[in-house]
Image (cartoon, rainbow, N blue to C red):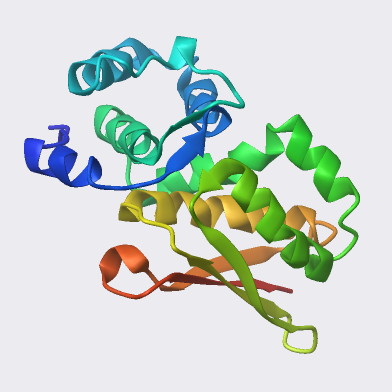
Length: 198
């Protein structure tokens, strides 16, 4: 039986402050658009917030950040997905973004990609600061933080896949893994990730 988002979870989501660009929501919709259950996803989301309509969302307009979490949670519930499926969804997002591909074409190294991450993140989420922490060329890893970014753990799972692909694209396709070391959704002051490559 598929688990559905509860009223308590919705209440907690609505407390999340901040905004997300429409393109982040449209990316979710694009990923599931060919699936049979897409109408069910839309129906559930409309019941929770009648103003939320994937078809009316504009790429560059700001929308409530909690909608971003809601989108992912409802998709996960309706399709009966596990975390690995949300990670895969995150992995595919940069591959399907023309803008990301163009930007990363000019980031000839993982170090450059890391430095530019702050500008890119702030164009999609507000508030929130992407902060590079450490670049270790010898041991082949980078560490970075997301500060002042309220969220539900679902977005962290999605970011694991997203950051993996961005790291891979910015590192000439080398096999890449991402782990979340700290999570603001689980009591830490910020989110902290580590990207490793071979």
